[in-house]
Length: 290
Image (cartoon, rainbow, N blue to C red):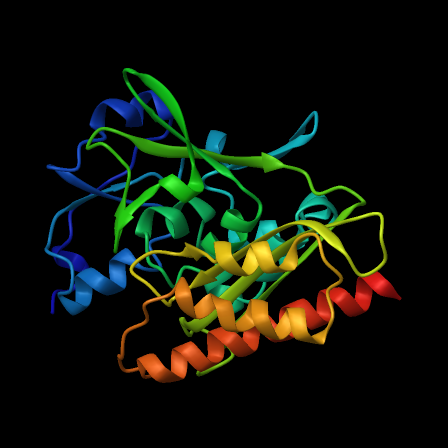
């Protein structure tokens, strides 16, 4: 274990100043530091000089751009949870950001940090899958935009080149024909990683209790967040009755590969994944049939 006094930190004030320093061989990048600092103190991450980008206020925003919402990577989870735009047009993400941890954590933790940490239990990631979000990364050579479902190459491994920085997350705003939710199961209400999380997005069809499109994403049940494509197909284009909900919920088992760790066994995670999906589909059906 190391102490904070042993960690060297450099803090650029502008993105222009920061980008030339973005080099993963020399620095470990932190924003809120709610994950990285703990991991370094505990020795699960090797000691490395830190590049603290928390002062880059130009990356701290929530903007409406036509039919899209754009969120700067340094926007805090508290600001996301409390945002009128996010609550109205991206309710799934607002639900997740408000449940991640204590007030101290959500006021400091950032959405870019949640993505960059690339943990399958990162609670903002399943909602971004369900919203079909895109991640914008930048370097001194320019920027590129990556669908969030393609952003993770494996456990704790985001698709970031050694000189790139996450600068924005964007997605299409939810409209009146869409609904969604986020559910998680954790061992404690605050400051606990999810044992399993589920995000569901549905588009209503013209027929009552029928949905023309669906996205179902699960966290903490595989090396990365996963989409339950088979479950989505079961939900689409058919009356969402009890049999269809049960079939879609059980079908998530074909998309996940949970492990056993200190928070729960693989079998426990499989059961919770099915149960949360079942609960989420029931809740969405109830509030969209009326």
